[in-house]
Image 1 (cartoon, rainbow, N blue to C red):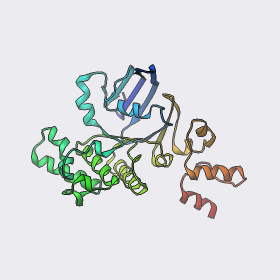
Image 2 (image 1 turned 45 degrees about the vertical axis):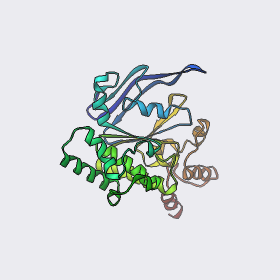
Image 3 (image 1 turned 90 degrees about the vertical axis):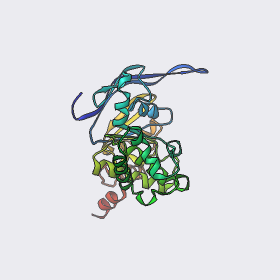
Image 4 (image 1 turned 180 degrees about the horizontal axis):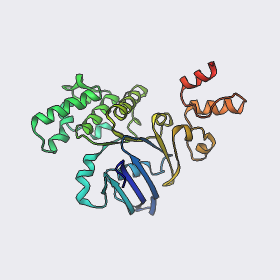
Length: 279
């Protein structure tokens, strides 16, 4: 495993056992590596294996076959799981499932307290994590009084207080309104760029992946496409065949190009499109 890699997956397969359906492979022959500081978005239709793959990244699920390494530690070895989960923190779809305390600061302190850290160190980590996600003013608030986006930012702060090198977000905006989605995505992008935290974002919102360094598209448990957003999103027809819809700007650019407008296919944002049309 290269020193620049934080996650390496080799021939990973995962088989579910369902009482009514029998065995089926949710993931098959997954091979990939994720570099330190990289922002990777994992896309795919429902049932493609996105969440199953996410749960392998911090050993919540273990491969049926193949291997997965986090910081060089094999997830198949149970002795590694504590260190792996400190390196790779997980944020789930519903923040209510991760919030356990009666105030924001107590919730963020929960992880560091379980690490047995001194009180002064816990206080510092809590303050830093809340500052990073923009929730310092709410540290004395009851979590149940917060908005959905604010709750998710508290959940992220709780993971950050553990000082992970990698942040795994499993459809973190699925239950949020547009404002909450924007708050969470801006926080995640800032963590990646300013704190150099590796981000793995599992999402079914195509526009959320535009900010990623790399996109991985799953279909029926295998990697169907991989590349930069500029490489993936112009493939409008191919994405449609996989049950996905390209971001609106990418779709518009595709239609304009078909109509004879001379535009680069890699345009993904409104500002980029306006810049090209006005020049």
